[in-house]
Image (cartoon, rainbow, N blue to C red; front, side, top):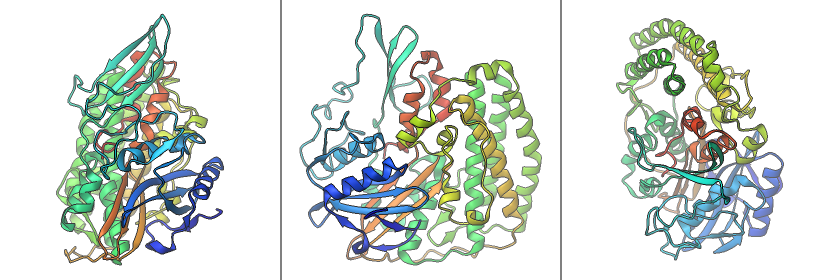
Amino acid sequence: MGKLLQIQNNERLNRADIPHLEFDVFRQELVDFVENGGQIVQFFAYEDQGAMKLLAVMRNDKLFVAGCDGPDHFDSLTAESEKFHMFEREIGEQYGLKAEGHPWLKMVRYHENYTGKKDVFDNDYTQDIPGNYPYFQVEGETVHEVAVGPVHAGIIEPGHFRFQCCGERVFHLEIQLGYQHRGVEKLLQTVPFKRLPIIAETIAGDTTIGHSLCQSQAIESLADLKVDEGASIVRTIALELERIANHIGDLGALSLDVAFNPPAAYFGRIRGEYLNLSQVLCGSRFGRGLVRPGGVTHVMQEEQRQLIREKLAELTPEVIHVSDLIFTAPSVLGRFDNAGTVSHENGEKIGLVGYAGRACGLPYDARVTFPTECYGDLPANTNEKTDGDVCSRATVRREEIMHSTALINTLLDRSAEAASYIPEEIKLAADSFVVSLNEGWRGEVSHCILTDDKGEILRYKVKDPSFHNWTGLALSLRDQGISEFPLCNKSFNLSYCGFDI
């Protein structure tokens, strides 16, 4: 792919081997790549010995990387492709590098940039949250705004949703997050090494396994740690249990949003059963404390194996039955069908990932394209309904529940046992780079680590799938009735905290 270097998932590279291009060449390489159907995994800035740098990790069916010096001002890539939109805003927010010509250059989150530079944004709204935030406006006598949040009626994280409407019809939805910025990436670069797994598990509480697995794999690559087959089986089962529990919870919530209460009650109870299976596996319903660099902290014995196998056999018919209640009810399908549609073209343009992308006909699944742990020899899933609407997103979830159940049953029949995890002093390779990708339940989770000449973490970059997909939610409301917002929102069910890092 031109001057980009092809790499492997979780491959350790010497930083000197990463192509360092002139900015104009770097920019053109990335633009050409996405125009040919490629997507962005990571695009971020970092500081190295007083100099600003940019680094990009790209993907099609392979992974590629390149870097360049980071100019204070540069021609926006978003002007050529929407895929760079959020990444360039984040680069400006974090390191004060301004993408000239960006169509909507604003902070992603509220905080001072890491370098202490003056803000590069045209509006000084960083000290007045959120009063001076420049929202997009639609003008006209019959146009009105509806503002929702950041304080919500339920127990929910803060986010502001600004609707531009004509009557009930939504012209445009702008979503502003970042109200509880935690500075996770900075923490990962500064805290004692032993705290890294604890922080990774709390990046997004419902994606504990997805984030901790990415971090552990990246560290294992940099520290040359080997993971035995038994540990890989446990990790893969844990990730699939996390996927099932979240999809089941959301199918129940979707039922509740269309006032079909029985499936919501059934699935609420069943979700708890799957969370309890995670507790059987590792002592935590959310998988906390299980995945660590070098293996897992809990060995799966025959007793746990049998408990999980028997409970899956009991729950699977229940899941099928309750799913049938949802997908055969005309009143439910009347609300799901053709609601909140994101077209295949728009999904590709903004880089949707996970079930939201697959519901638009974008087949990408990191478990298949960049397999880790046991996924290389496990069967892929298929999706039958890919119209991009609420019904498609719900159907993909149903398909993934059944697929994940089959994967777990396959893995339970493998007899390899994990060796006991023993904490050890870990030394990371100096002047190195690694990127780790896994298919979390929402989609592609990625962690990228660069080390300095002493083996210390120079830059730690995290990307949750919600970083891509919040824009998809905004697009799904265009030309919809505003009353469809709760349904569309739940069909995506994106993470506030996973975005606000």
